[in-house]
Structure formats: structure tokens, C-alpha cells
Image 1 (cartoon, rainbow, N blue to C red):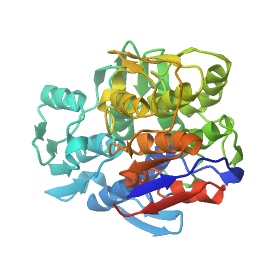
Image 2: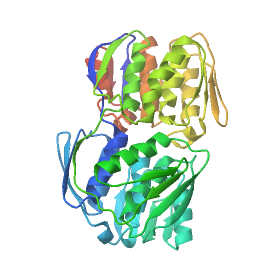
Image 3: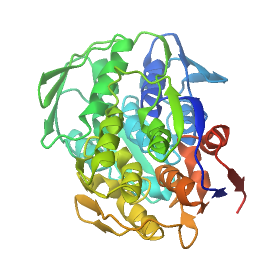
Length: 404
């Protein structure tokens, strides 16, 4: 899909999109519960479809009506032998479901896009090797088998919190207690706390034993819930960024007490308004693209803790450097930092590329509201926010979308 955006500003009130991070967690918790749960505020994004499809593949019954999903839990110790789970392009789905699939004992294969399957999975591979479990990666997918055991786990804290969350879903179901020791440096800790908060809604207890060790009591049971997904700070950031460019948009539905790490965008945006700041994004890597975009329009910026941007849906630092160059903005990408230099910002000299990455598409769209521009591969926004361009139109922006 190609999106043509004319320069302009927007005004209005917008309900924040539901938090994709929390939605994944609540849906999976519901599948582990003994009974029927109702989760409201589920979007029709590609990532949500991936998680719902995978839950169905392992035996959970999910019924979606509007933004409400009713989930009847399943006994994951009886996952169908040979089940195939298509995770599409969702890294959360893939990494959350590997431990779930290691509850039943049988062989299960997780598939997805080539980009997804190229993302690091070494944490689980090492765990399976130590416990004598099957972990067989191929170009078509990852086949796992055997039963995960309780015990003491040691995991590097700077690879992805998604591995920690995956284990936290299943370790409470073991007969014995477990610990997860995180090897510093620990990044994206807010996502771990978000998982602990979500699990508590199902009556599951996980606690920090100290600043780097999680204690997970065994012998627990998930209870069904009726819950609503809170607003998403990560996607709201793109619309809040428009306010720094002349728009007047009020975003409702965000929980001021949320544990979402991306809530920090408000402070980061304020820093970009004041000058050329240094901002560490190791705990909020998903904000990288929109922060780079705003730095390009404002006075530049230095961003540290960017190493993990290479293993997202695209190499996000490299992708944004490529797109910002079209606006005349120089960017230097280092191993763990990105520098956006102050420069004369002008209309892009050629069409922008979405790099098959929803956050790159949305960051480019924000920039295009200043200069105008054409975005190729704009359909990638459907991964997390399928109505992104419709939201822009409702706010008064002139956006035309058509097939390539």
C-alpha cells in the first residue's frame, strides 16, 4: 500500500489504541485459566491475530465480538501432538509461546515470517539444551518438545524481556518453585513488571527477590478474569509527537499509573523541545523511530542503548537513518548509539520506505505531515495499529491510501 500525506496539522480528541503488550499478556493468561475469561479492548492488529490463532492451535477457545474476546482456558499439558503455530511477524507471540509449548511434552512447531524466524532465540535454545529438551530451528520454523522443568534459571538481562515473560507464564504452574536470575545489565525491566502486574490479575504471584532475581512460587493456578486492556503509550507517542509539530490533539484512555515503559515519551519529547539532548532508550527501544524523527525536525539528539534496534522488525536505526537522509538529515549509527545531527529539514527527495516495519511507517508519516511525502509499504502499520491512517484522517490530516 502507498500512503500519500499532505503537509498540515490536526486537531481533535482521540482514544488511545489498546496496549498490544498488555493484550498479549491478558489473552495468554486467560488461556491458562480454569474457566472463561472476557478481555475487552482487543484490536484487530496482525499481532493480535497471531496470538489468537496460536491460542486456538494449542486448544484454547477464543471468540471475538467487536473488541471483546471471550477465552475458555485449556489444559496445556495436552497440546495436540504435531500442532503448528503461525506467529506471523509477532516477536512477542513467538517468544511467549515457546515455554507454553513446552508444557505438554509433545512436539510443536512454531512458524512465522523469515524476518521473525531470524530473530535471536538463543536463550530458549540454551535452556532446552540444559534440560534435555528438543529445540530444532530450521528455515521453516522452530520445533520444540519435552516438558520444561522448574528450578534456577540464569538469563542475560540485555537480550529481550520477552524470554523472561515467556517463562513467567509457565513456571507458576510447576509443582516446585523457581528463580530467574538476570545477569546485568538489565534492560526493558518495565516489561517484566508489566507481566507481573498482568499475572496478578489472574491470582498469580511473582516477586522480586532482589534487584536482579525473580522468585516464582510453584503450585499456582490461574483464575479467570474480566478485564479491559489499558491504552497504549507506545502507539500514542506517534500522535503526541504531532503536537510538537503544531497539531492540537488530546489523547484519552491512557492510564497515568501504567507500568508501561514507553510512558517516558512525555519526558523525552520535552527534552527534544529544549535542545540537543542525550537520551537512553535501552528500556524503551520501541520509541526509537519516533524519537529519531522528532530529533530531525528539532535540534538533533544523541540516543544511547540502541543496540537492540537491529533485531526488531527491521534494523530500525539503519532504516531511520536511510529515511531521514531523504529529508536531508544526517544520522550516524554506532553499535549502541545513534546521533541525529541538526540540519536543514526539507521535503523528501524520493518516496519513503516502510521497511516492512510498523514503527518506521508511523514515524515517517509523522515527518510527512511537515513536508508532505509518499510512503511505500505503508501496510506494515497494520501489524500494531490497523487504523493508523484512518485516525490521521479523522484528526484532519489529508491522507490518501491506495494499492501499490
